[in-house]
Length: 332
Ligand code: KG4
Ligand code: ZN
Image 1 (cartoon, rainbow, N blue to C red):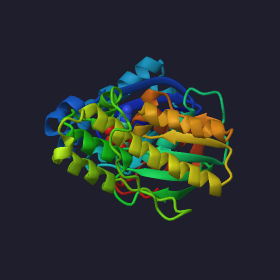
Image 2 (image 1 turned 60 degrees about the vertical axis):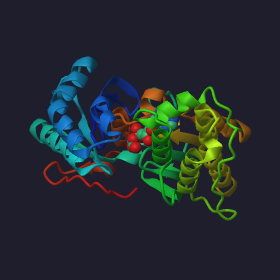
Image 3 (image 1 turned 30 degrees about the vertical axis):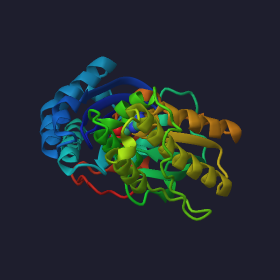
């Protein structure tokens, strides 16, 4: 199938043309960071208005770059949730209009399912079901057993903050620019990961839930304490990052001990973190499991992953263009 993907759940106005859930013919993203940076976070009102003014051009751009006419598409895939309602409605309304006017099938995609299938973009392998996915983004952190495109089971999730959220909040305390994750990773590169023993959340044996709020609070108290004087910010960043990676990797090991899978997938914006990705690959190697981490550009929000998920899920994602409504709190 040749699909146009549209993703506007947060602050990226993204469009893509993808063939067979795998070959990315065009991948367009208009990042809004400059508009939000001065507020230290995403302002929903601004995000929504930017989507409204940019999306038509982004659709045309993706089609032009792919050298594909609207008529040649086999369908349109759009993120229906979860996300910011004002942002989602712009993408959904546009996709509905294009599908209705062009008489094309419309596919409604859960943003998080998109992240999972991002790992197979530009790869010549079929997803080896069942696989274990660690999905870590700005809004979600969870372990998922993926037995098939329509058979996904959450094994464990965060009790409080998402991993990306913890990165962003601590980056802010360190005086780093928005978005915090990549900035904190860059600062951590020159730091000593053993400098500060930040707490690691360890639930009872066998439990697979995650938690990052204790770690975040600990980092906040540390930075406000006398102990912080004379400690390099890079050491704080590296120690904080190490604690997040340890917690995530411990939960992956626990999930592997309790579930038979054929492969490992790391996905979501935090998958762009090289320290995490390297640790994740080591787990895969130790268990002799093929390990898939999306290309960096497909880790953070993009529209290619939305088209990829629609292609894999197929008929089960098909919706009526007249009836579709965005759902900001769409469950997994
Ligand atoms: O998946 P994503 O683009 O958007 C959501 O669906 O939330 O994830 C964004 C999150 C942000 O919290 C951002 O700080 C984090 O991913 N992130 C990173 C890195 N790149 C993005 N966190 C740590 N290290 C990175 N290199
Ligand atoms: Zn995302």
